[in-house]
Amino acid sequence: MRLSRFVMLCICTAVFSGCGDDDVTAPSLPPLSQVRFINALYDTGGVDIHAVDQVNLSPVANNLAYRAGTQYYPTEAGVRHFRVFPTSTNINVTSQVMADANITLPEGRRLTLLLTGSARAGTVNLWMIDDSDDPPPAGQVGVRLVNAGTGVVNGYVVNTATTPLPGTETFSSVGTLNRSPYVNRPTGPAAVRVTDAGSSTVNASAAGPAAPATLAGEKPSAGVTQEGTNFSVYYFRAGAAGSANASVTSPSLIWFVDRNPCDEPAVAACAP
Image (cartoon, rainbow, N blue to C red; front, side, top):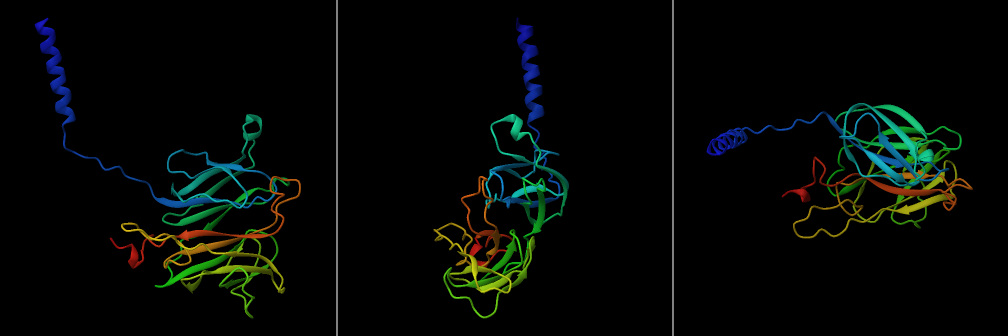
């Protein structure tokens, strides 16, 4: 009995001696990008989007509705394999592959994978958009227009969603699945209005979100009233009749934040 206790004591001592090593191993990360999804599929319901090559360091979207987007996810850069599925509790439905794509994600960039095409026509695909522009100058925000609808459009950055159109458009002749450069604007109320190119009839208008008040100890948040913010304003077509998006009866604009004020390089207000 004493011998057994002695042997057990020796084993425990050896185990704890080995665990007491002060060496620390720092985990290494592969090259990363920041990736989000935005859904521009106008003729179907929610979708699930997954990387099927690996689970770790991969973006994900579950039941992503038309005109909705995800946050940016830290994502391993390089050639990645994505699939799109219809959202359903029926395994026979949700296992159907709507799109299958290998996409090369560049390192160190903020990227949008925009889901485009038509579910009914079987032309669903992912279009990669680079969102990683430089921060706007001090006291300003950046705004650009992304045409996720149809046709060629002009865009106007104005003060409110009802401000009359100025004589010259801010974004000229932005075609389907194209984007304008960022335009810098002083912080303050802002809206975008869109017409067909060559027309003065407004198809859609939307005001940009103001930044919430910054509380003591907090970092400033994104908004048209907070310098250092970049936005993409996406133009979407009306939903298809008879689809889950039929209630979207007109073209629309949605503001998405591409750059927060405290993204590197950060604005002065983000200093500790």
